[in-house]
Image 1 (cartoon, one colour):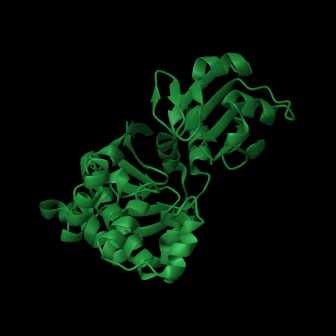
Image 2 (spheres, helix red, strand yellow; image 1 turned 180 degrees about the vertical axis):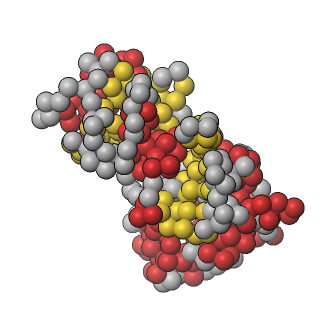
Image 3 (cartoon, helix red, strand yellow; image 1 turned 60 degrees about the vertical axis):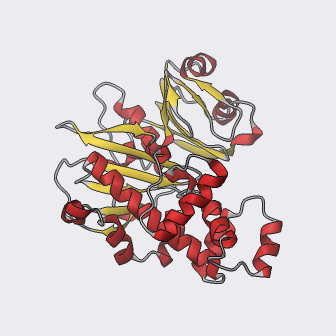
Length: 333
């Protein structure tokens, strides 16, 4: 029996799986508000108290870097330690992995209904796979085939230097650099980055903010949903412009990641924002920027590009990781 979890700053999703059942059929599942609990131990204990199932291992995808079996969760005062979790929950084996690495573990198990294909390409059998996910931050990971199956590896590539490709993006770089110093891709291509793009367009006079939108922002703690919704609806030109610039930067960095890991098997775009903006995603423009890499444009034109639609992909990946970690297990969907 495996307990899998997707641990986030806002909510935590948990599910119990058996080796004998498929990944799409957990024995129990629930989503709980993370901030209501003082620790992951307390949250898991609350989940398990009504479920009398013997657990022999657990696998948790966490929103933050994992070092030596420990992780500090982004946006939560939780320090998670795998060994302490094992003792507190009486689960013999507990493993932690970064949430992007969890998504990467799920990628080989995704089906057509889990994906929106931006570009079908010509995937190379056994070719490396890249994962990039603009959510609250910008996560990146990759998978390499070892001759038998794909193995997932973490990355903090989202914190690499932002490389502008147009005069507008050069101005954006200067604007953000003046305020924040180092400008990573996360600063301009994530939930944290989208407000920076919006503020740049407004303060540099690139787009005008209507009064009605300014009034709505005044009452919002998180401006991202409003920017995304207004951009998708087309109700505000500044939000349309912000989403366009966001998607251009995402396309360029997705192409960069494809080159860095030679992702001839495909690029998979996760995170909470991309599925919400599909209706305004210009596939031809996106792929034009993705492939605009000089002498390697032809290679990138063969790389498939998919957007992950499954909202439970990180939980699925944590389960794959846990089941594959048990000797001789066969993971099915």
